[in-house]
Amino acid sequence: MDSSQSTALGGNGGSGGNGTLVSQTNDMTASAAGADDSMQKLSQVSNSIQKTLGLIHQLYLTVSTFNAAFQMPLLQRMYFILILFLNGLVVELDNMVKLAEKCNIQVPMEVVNLIDDGKNPDEFTKDVINSCIAKNQITKGKTDALKSLRKNLLEELEQNFPDEVETFRESRAAAAAELKRQAQAQSALPNGDVRVKSEH
Image (cartoon, rainbow, N blue to C red; front, side, top):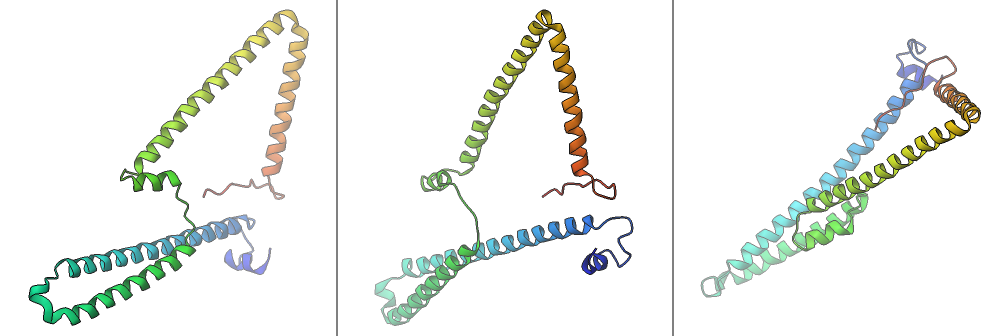
């Protein structure tokens, strides 16, 4: 055990554990930090979008409420206000592009097309789930058919070749026991502890 693990375990030499808890905790901490970093970047992009929408709204209000007959003396001043809004909009759009490059979020084109068509993107999710359910049912039907075929074949073989079927079943049981033993041996650590998979 290196000094960092010893320190992380409170300097007690890892009593009650063998150091794997520390590496799993570090992995989970790193993935949590990565998730927090990703969420922070996403939040920054979201804030930039909100600022951009606010600037566009202010620009719209300024332009739509302009009345040339009453506000001609203010035209020069409004020109500068519009320039400021447009400059702010360009800066915010540039900032949004830079922030978006740091976010690795992939949106299916079908969702973008649905949004362009003015539809709810939840419809895409519903369609995907329904499609998965349908494919799952088809696969389950195939699996059940193969299980039924296997059962019928074994019954027919047992009637015609009982000795061979008994040998087959014994070899299958031995192979299954060997696979189970190997799986347990791979998950066991040198000191007898069992390696636990971390959930992400």
